[in-house]
Image (cartoon, rainbow, N blue to C red):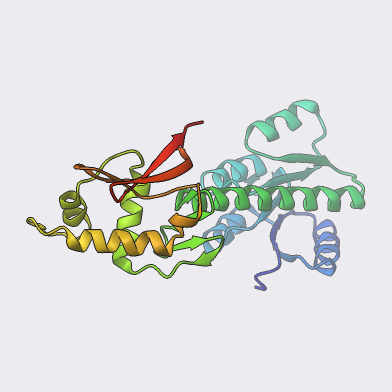
Amino acid sequence: MNENKSLILMVEDEEQVLNTNCRMLRRRGYDVRTAQTVSEVYHQLEEQLPDLLILDIMLPDGNGLDICRHFREKTMNPVLFLTGKSDIRDKVEGLQQGGDYYLTKPYNFDEFLAVIQMLLERQKRMEEKIKEKFQSSRQITIGSLRLDLSDGHAYLNNTDTGLTRTEFSLLRLLAENQEKIFSAKELYEAVWGSCAGTDTSTVRRHIFNLRVKIGAEDTDEYDIVSVYGKGYLLPAGKCLFFFTFLNIRICLLQYT
């Protein structure tokens, strides 16, 4: 199947209706598969779930409501009922069983196409939102600095900062625990996985390199701050300005 085509499974026991709809939909670029019985539908659903399920209600060996319930156990992809049952109670039941739209026969083909397009586009937007939400959960953004947890890279204004794996681990630890002060010993044990003893020069060197690479000297959006006698932290507030006292860079923070 062409990955760019939406897959539609049309369930209809009237041969003429089935052939006409399939022909028209395929002309418009849809990948259409068909079934005329409940058993055929279940077999096809085991092979592949369609992007859209178009259902008649009355079928030779069952009804579309049962299919809809079964489909809903597998996916939230849209369901369009296309049926001759026009009573309002039938419409309500179809929607209550998980249908997204209910068209009755006879129907206008332009409306039929518009509904199909609407349902597929709505589903695509929902999937994109879910994807964006998942991706955002795998990122930490602080001003113009973005940590991508999935690929282990940090980006400044969407440009890779070129952090080493150790530098990224160090920055991630501080970014995930903003406002928490880590001693050099704690940072060493968390990032390097061993005891630093009394030698903290490795941590100091990495903090220095890290601050240079993320451009901490050139922005008021973030910084890795040295807390005299205690350790390091990444403040959660905006740095209004910096000053240096006894070779220690200090920032005045604003919290929102």
